[in-house]
Image (cartoon, rainbow, N blue to C red):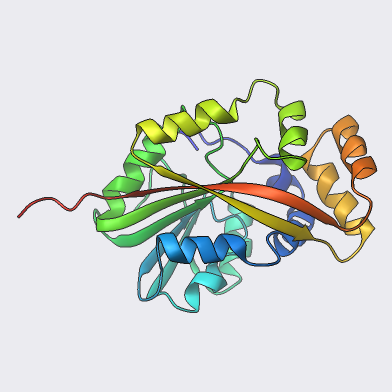
Length: 229
């Protein structure tokens, strides 16, 4: 996410299929376990930046003190609000929130490229309370097979350079192995076809014999420094 809002064709154009993708991702909860270890949201005020249709908001709400979404695409804002949550129509670089108002800023599959997202990182720091955490969860394009399909469709994307970008800015990086599980082949095919070009989707479908895909994630975490008294 940058100062200029970058469209997300998968969820913007096919929200119903993307909802099926969300349901299929990380079926064993590995990302959530890692997130809990890195930055527990129990009793916290949580902001989910780029929340899409709000899929993750109810999960946070089970334990958080409060949950707020931010999403720039109006149709997705409406879908997220229909879940019963407060959702701001806003991009990452201009959050209409007071300074030091949340404990956890969560952004999932939103900051892949690294360079260019500096305004969003600065806004996250502004709204975080001292000791609060900014957690960025992205797909790990160094992990096969999904990462190879990503790199084939975005040849200019350098996942190693992106990781270095976050490391230079004080983020830790944690790699997480997950499993995507689909109810049937038709759903799997629909998801792969909104994520990849036709040629890459065809290649992916030929390589996946059933309804499961191993997918790697990376979790970048940075805490807002507590200033000396």
